[in-house]
Image (cartoon, rainbow, N blue to C red; front, top):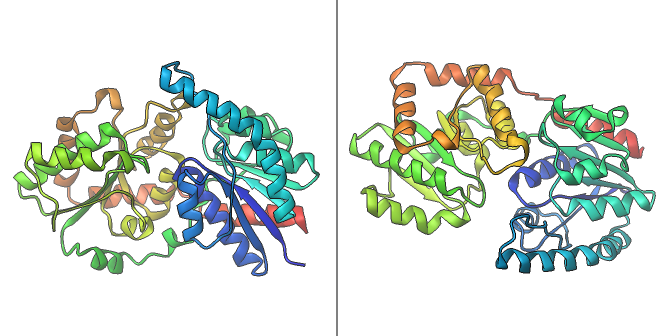
Length: 373
């Protein structure tokens, strides 16, 4: 009988890509497995999951906004309404899919789906990507059969040490499988230094602003650089305006997209990555062995991106610039210093690769199949 799996994940690429990596690994281990996803149709998950070819089941769950503004009050009324409907909707999805295993990979949608599965006696597991677990996973940990943590620091915080396994963050096999020379040829790098920058799938205003200063400097000084930048959904118009203000152009030296669809290839082609410090991003930087300048988001629980990023800086694999200290000038200065020292970026990349937990997917798949077999 074919193994049926339902994976719930949503919100950001940091939840969805590990979920897709786990789905791919389960499919490789059990080619007959039927893998379904549950998530929001308005969220990023719908596009990424359907593009990967998995059946998608819609459930609407939103977070409560703590800052009380008129707009947020409306959102909170919607959130309470969706929360009331989420239990029956989760049960309907379970009835339709009839899964043998349900996995939560984070985001609000994981909550009702995994909880309903656990109550129905279906095998359940969750994966926590951060050292400081999200609220949903902390609530679910006591009810599920298996808890996967990316790092040791999360184990006590999740509150179920007897069934928690430290496995790292699952990285898509494509990140490991890239050929650097082919990737550089594909982006037209030539002999140039390739800088890849992004602020997350939605875009980070501050990251877009300082990257604009960097792009202006690269073009003004005629640096031998190919710069690839993703603005995120909310940064598209902003970055166009900044290009006009600061006098730089899109073209052969600067390629700008809203969202990076081919991240494994671009990581392979890059010499230096400028990004936020989400757990998945760091795992992929380590897997690809890339030097980085990390700008932790200050808008996350327990400032966990900062602490994640510090581990790479301590290892000599990254430079961390906190947003409160971030200016276009000090980003330019940092890049200039790194480019000035021959072999520096390569050495930082090697140090990043040495931190990689390359067996994460293998460990997760092994435990999941043990649970259902």
